[in-house]
Image (cartoon, rainbow, N blue to C red):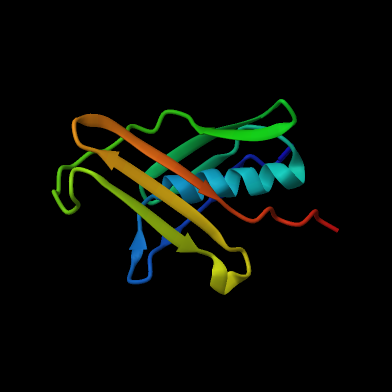
Length: 122
């Protein structure tokens, strides 16, 4: 990432463009860092500027969204206790999972997952 710090990024769901997607932003920052090293890219999105910090800790790259306020809205669309597992990327040859666990009486949202590592650049 040295030298190139600003990027315009857009996000699309299957039905429409969306203003922001945190997971896609972190994944993009990590993909750029795998090629150019740690740094602080800033993405311009429809929701505004999104700075990201990418560091190398214990040999691994770690990305953190810097200064994005969370938005929480109660929709009551899922049970209080549930585990949702999303399978993604198989159609692109990069299979992965994202599991979200909610527990009644516990305000925390547990997120875990796995994915396929990008190949080293040629």
